[in-house]
Image (cartoon, rainbow, N blue to C red; front, side, top):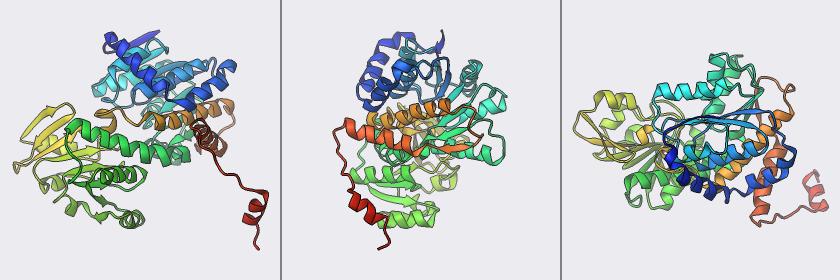
Length: 412
């Protein structure tokens, strides 16, 4: 086994984190119990690029238990947890990750995964998938499963341009993922990152949520639940109308910039908060991002124009603007929930990572039968994961009678 991690002395702390998560990932444990004896991934090389924290580590361990050779790196330079990465070296084949990777180290670690000639890729943001195409290292790959909205968007763009080289499963688009992970997971974990990094009250402040997709809905709901006055900024008239009927103030960024105390970007697009907006903000505002890449807040403008830049707390950087005002950027403008906290709650990632495991099995069972396109998670797989979660949590569903089924199918 070959490993590249920052500090192996952290192993015991990391193992405790992984153990804590593993005890609460009931669905993933049940799937391992069902499949472990038959070893469905025996002889399969799995390359993973996910935020390397305890829940991700346990997914890697679960894949290993099903027979896979597992190599893993982190899908973001600041989201690997060094203690977890160190601990994981005792469980899987190759670990290449540490917090604070330079852009060059980040790229090199992804290349190290591709050097293992993976058959399956489990990706978060599609960096590993796209690198395999750019570097012509895709020939051994028979499938990809993608975790995020951003990654699915990028893979669909590859498909449209005719350069996607393997079938991909859009795990993000499964009902069992976006309805719960994107909404409830992001809602809680983004606010967790805000609170941990700033130690500041949410109640009584004006919070501006930019983007009202599933992530934005969850973030807005949790901020309001903690007492913030929430404004939504949207470009889509239908989402703006939904936010209005949900009880939020809805306006554009020019107006919201003037009174917001806390800003959270949830769009996946570039420069939704620009220098023009920041110059009009109050002194001392918090800027944070819930999207995959650090492009939503214009960090390049800040670095070029700030009179002073300094870290004032862990994961909090102060930028003094040309007009003398200060803005505080959390987690370098990267994902605040993973850069400044532990990411989504365990129960949420149990659902998402169970979908990842099932999607890996689906791609394995259907290798050679699928086209180079982006597929939805099969409905039966989606239902299986959610129904298993409900069953294991003691939740009982009502059942339609034959009369009720007939009525719903009748025109009378």
